[in-house]
Length: 121
Image 1 (tube, rainbow, N blue to C red):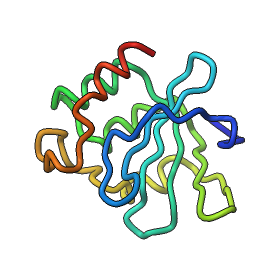
Image 2: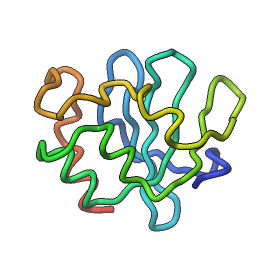
Image 3: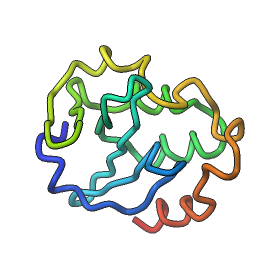
Image 4: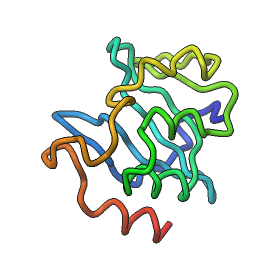
């Protein structure tokens, strides 16, 4: 669980449409994702692994499954300047594009160089 999202270093967006839908972050050697929430209440931040990201990018699992694979029991939601913690399960159905496989998304949303960035971190 990340408690201070200001300590995260942004690597890049994985999905973007006039703003981040899915951002990739790093702190020390740990990778984190920030997913936009469908109810427009900000971004949820959670830990992830290269394995889960590569499974997502290779259409083996959905983004929602990446979220559920996170080792975090508690996640942080950031909206404007407020950060609030939630049980991971409480936000699982609010992940933007959470029910989609990567190949089901428009190429216009995708960062086509992200897999190289993931594997180099």
